[in-house]
Amino acid sequence: MQTNIKGNNVRMDRQTVRDLLFIIETIFPESEIPALSEVVEASEKHFDVVTLRNDPDHYSRTCAEWLRRLRNNRTAAVESAGERVVADYERYLGATVGHFDNRHLGLSRITFEAT
Image 1 (cartoon, helix red, strand yellow):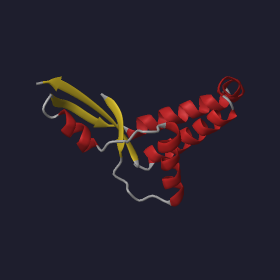
Image 2: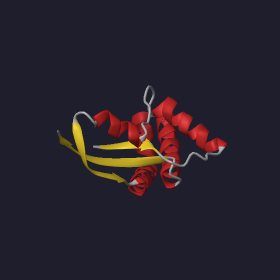
Image 3: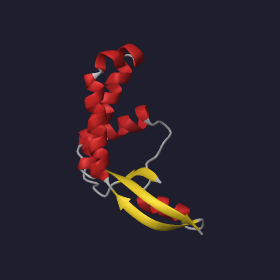
Image 4: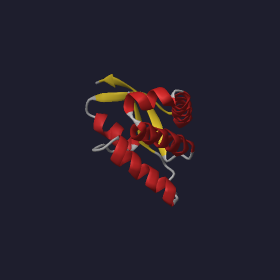
């Protein structure tokens, strides 16, 4: 399983908080990013954890590449989805790169085995 998780860096400036709220409210409404401990605890009675990794640098690079490709194809993206959606995703992807780099977010990769 691969999922974003809350990172361990709780020191955030105002812009970081604004960006996180924007992502929660605009990109992923009605969602909540779990802590790693919550993911593992929820699986306890059903699965054994075989491997567990946190790869925030991998997802930072992925989001940076998605942002680069979006910008390179911005005209077509605006024609397809509209200016507002493209601008929202540029903000989301740009902010997300920083959130992973600064460890406000993590990328958990867990291999489970049924018990």
